[in-house]
Image (cartoon, rainbow, N blue to C red; front, top):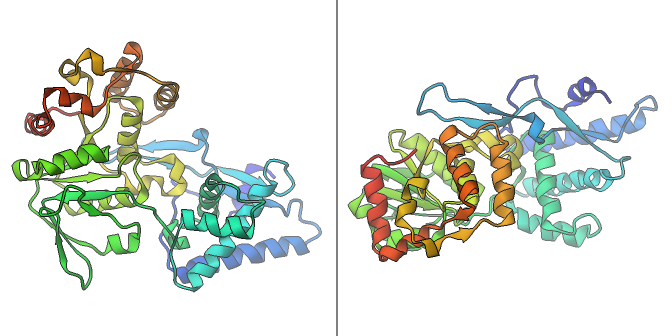
Length: 385
């Protein structure tokens, strides 16, 4: 099928540069699934149909990625997928099982939406592992198929009844209030902070109150807890947030909501000085292509506070580590991307030239109380990119 034919076969898309996934009510998502089934059955009944076995999906390949640049200097740029298609074919050897997986995931989503339930992708995996073990033998099959369904139906995972698994937490000068619930004062919590729910419907209804001036995004839970233990937010009026590693959807969602609620509150990222740290920062800043059509939705204007090349004199030589093969792989991917800004590219190039990486914990060589002073000094001095 020619690309124009595939595009014409798209169930719900329109011809625009940016392809996105809509937030839809359960009834409309179920209707889209029904349309997909009816179209497939109609193709089966049509003897003249050249290829009944093709599912047209928005391509998530590098060739289909683009960057929306911010119009203003401090605006938000984001990655996006454009209107180019790939295909899942029942008759192609490598696609046959992937084709069937799409229908099986849609079947489960149809049922859970009808029951008014939400499930995590992990729960979805165990359900389909028990029902169809020959098609779903690992979590990766679920993750990829969910993105295929998002690509086919043009609706978000939450709209499909699939809830984000959240590892995130926040703490600091902010009060949270859900509908009909008590206030949660995050400034009086223990160092683990307030756990971020994976239910985006709940997160979307939270009411925020804050007198903070800064929002500090922390890569690692251990660093988050160190800063929370030191109550840095009482000295530097701030909110701390972490996804405990690579950002999950729920943490990105609440960060984006905070950026919209408090547009004058700058967001600073504290990450390791290695390619993975930069990749984490870029995911918050531009979005993630691995999320497909939802990629651009939660992008925020994140500033890189540290660690950076200018901070290396603070780190003893014994604390540096050699770059690992995984670091080199991430660096190669970042350098080939369209969105990496020049100052970020320069930092990454320095890592590769040195062949070294440094973690935030290396600053503890100056004492455990040094980290809070380091963060406060850099924020107050405007030492970020």
